[in-house]
Amino acid sequence: MKFTCDRSVLLKEIAIAQEIISSKNAVSILSNIYIAADHGDLIIKATDMKVNFETKVPVTVLEPGITTVFGGKFLEIINAIPEGELEFEHNESKITIKPARKRVKFQLKSIAAENFPPFPAPDMERLFEIPIKMFKEMIQQTVFAVSDDESRYQMNGIFFIKKEGAFVMVATDGRRLGFIKKEAPQEVKDFSGIIIPPKMLQIIMKRAGDEGLVSVSVTDKMLFARFGSYNLSSMLIDGTFPNYERVIPETQSSVFTVNRLELLDALKRVSLLVEQKSHRIYLGPAPGSLSVYSEESDLGAAKEEIACKYDGPEVAIALNYRYIEEPFRVMDTQEISIYFTDPNKAITVKPAPEKDFFHIVMPMQP
Image (cartoon, rainbow, N blue to C red; front, side):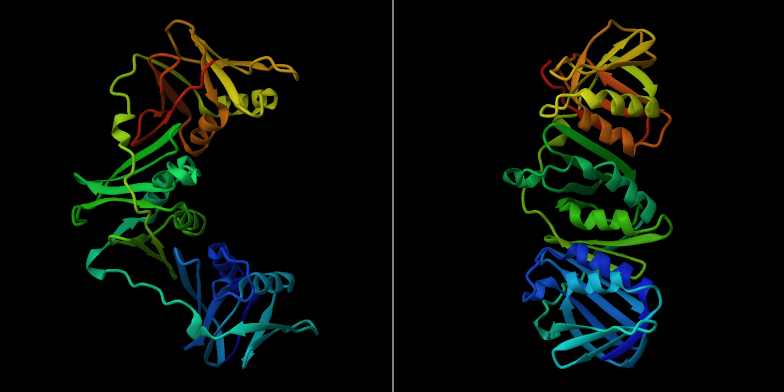
């Protein structure tokens, strides 16, 4: 195999492939990136056996061929070479990398491509399309609420379902919940709820643009997504997602509305003196103002007041500031409304005016 290509084009794709790889053992095929040069393209694959990644970039193919190369060092080498054209040549069990403008060359050992695991294929009959901007928004409003507690594995992913003419995505770690609902194309058939590990969805968030469509196929055990030159697939989490509908309050009697960016800035400043183990912060709505404050500690305390629309009695709601800061960051409205009934019960954070998503946060004991 022998080919030449532009360094910057290849670097971007190898960096994505390396994000997929979980094994760092140089002698493991799962640490390697698959590359195949033919017909003016270089096909690139990577996998951790749960998430699969495939793309292709244009190259000048001098000799077609296939091999795999240790992803970590392959990325480091390409990253260290200045911009310009690179030449790659594979002979027997090593690949040689040479930049056109530098008198240097690198050699990496390779592993035969036949040892690389095959990728599953999507069920074309179950393929449907979603506007990529909409799909990314659904991921953005939920992915940060995924639990990292491996003992609660059914919460380690995002719940995704199509029912009653709409797509729904939900994520929760038991202390907060992100929910979004979008109208689905009529031709898309309903499918039962699935739990998607966040790794694949985070790559879509980082790498997909806002234009065009993403093709999606859902099977009993896999999710497939295709956009641009990318093909991604992921094994689903086998389990029953918690009954999130029971967590959503039917009614909440009180609400206050604030400027989202003003509240974010206040949280940033007050959090400097928040106790670092509990991350407890207080929101104290009162008519016309909202107090954002930390409790007294060995280091001191902080308090800031911002304008607020509220006409109820003064209360104090104790919250983990990280759990409210993250939903504020992914919203795009100027104002947000926080609904509550009792300081010790769940609050609901919604954009103002309301949209098709919301976030629920459980308070802490004051």
